[in-house]
Image (spheres, helix red, strand yellow):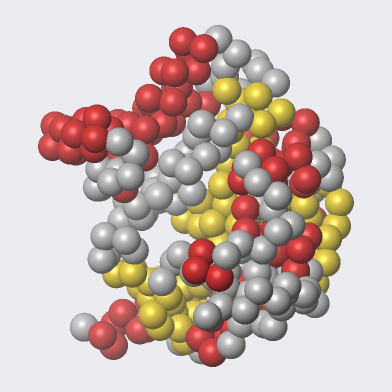
Length: 288
């Protein structure tokens, strides 16, 4: 029988492979934070990383990544400077530079490491430790235009993922399968859809994570990206929106300071292998 004794913070740190993975992410994030600050690029820790920073002063013990969020202006600024500011052995890639990716989030990758993950569809990915950078775009005030923007987001995300969403209703699943079978030039189609999604930037006071299936219907005030503070994270200090409480309560629709039930404390990315000393390109060559 599970004890009713109230847990106190801080909880014990993760152990084993998960802790090794967290420390690899931390090392990469320190490099990224330095590059962003030196070049005037604002970002905020997001999702579980934001909860970890505020509640745990670092990683949530069962979390297996670091989430970074930007508004469109800072994201585009980063894209224009990435080749100059990222340190040695760190690269940026997204779907448009690497069509093998099944997300529209940007990825900052430590090429000197190897990480193997398996997604919910059983697809194995061999890459370096990679931090996702998610962009928030403006959402039109007009409800009809907003619906069309959302539909464009759904189309783009289905085409990139290559699999129809399984948990977003039967209609979306049927439409997704149809879209995947009938679309010929997927990268070209996705690019056009993303341009349609972006066209409202600067024309609205609302923003959303339109290029992420879990966030394209959660609308935030754009002022969430107007001011930032430093927050303790493990042995480092990273940026977070000054409106982190507003963001997290709206993002999760609950009191994020309350620990979830133990059966909900899950790692989502299913890392099955980590080597922080071998470049993933070398691993792939040796695997063949």
